[in-house]
Image (cartoon, rainbow over all chains, first blue to last red):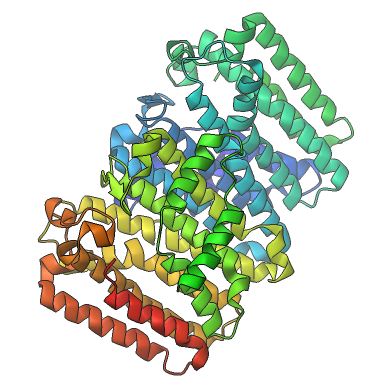
Length: 291
Length: 291
């Protein structure tokens, strides 16, 4: 994972305008959050999905980066005072704490816009068919929009203060707020690597399970984790009276559910060979992570 | 123009999820601002540019709408308390006044995301080559990003309280904040309609002139216009000590400059025939408008 993370970091370094590029402050703000020490889980999933279906992981780096840019924009906007009002993320002050709310909003906007610039850059045509690139763009825009990530964030905001939320809405929030983009990171990797319909179906099943598992583990870490390990405020869900899996089902039941989802994700990969090994390891990481 | 505006409105109606689509509030917020009575200048320019180079204006409606979605997102975010803090636009309360800051930020994000969804939708492949669609996406993402519209907005924010701004920075703000997307709306219309290199060059010249002209007229209307006509707070530039053309060059000189740019824009179309008539009329509208 470390090696893949460095690969992604180098590619991101290439795609984001330098801090010396005018107007300086916006590129500084974009880079501040993108290079704040993220796990790079989504882009690494993109590379692993491409590899699993027999593709070259390095060829899909551009799409992996685009997804990380979208993920980072969503974190910057989520942390804003009018949203979650978080002061720290990954042990560092959040973007608006350093650059002010106005620049933080624009840095988020800029990262989202840059994602589509990277996805549509002419260089990609050297390796991929235009039709394939277009469907990757469509897949990502749907996953990031109101029927995906933004929809989940909207319901998350509306549900604050409702710890007794109905299970259906809680599942909607979890599968949409983080699940949809996580799933897209896998599907796009597979799509670009010319996955067969059967392979894509298996990757989709894996991604659906692992996406929900990821968010349940997030909820658990908010209860059991430490700020040192997770890099963010813990116990914040309870403080905000947020609906979470532990709040609704209890800690033990939530852990059991996460384990079951992780197992189901592994089962989805049963027909894949050695090339899916990185994907299997990522599945293990997601359920057992402490940060 | 009225007919074209209705055409654009109908297409926008088609592309934005209904208010009855879950999560309701985000689609309500998106629609509130998109259907707040905008002039639809940018999408109408897209149609006119396609027509000018011999294309079918209706075929580029999807791209025209995508640009209007991006324009609308930029207005919602510009109006936020941490940005321009505007309470009214087009004689209606601004988005965050109705839906709250958090939903307004997400509505902006969602409109930007939707623009790329519309640009990459599979239906477009019935009429356009995937390569052409991809280059339209790239053109728009560049125009909307930190080297375009967002860059202009960043410098506009940083320049508040500096009425004696240097002319170079003022021109940067004006050509980037509104100019780049306006230019892209024309270039994309021409590109999709298979403009020749020469035609695209002329459209680019027209768009560059008309883009700056548009913003200078905006500055003038802030001094001379009324809230009734313009639909927004007037004298707000002076109140915020914003750098404007009238502040820097005086009202008469600014009017002269706007006229010169409008004339230069018309000259760029000299080699075009009857098909460029709508584009010529739009040029006249932009310099003589009172709203």
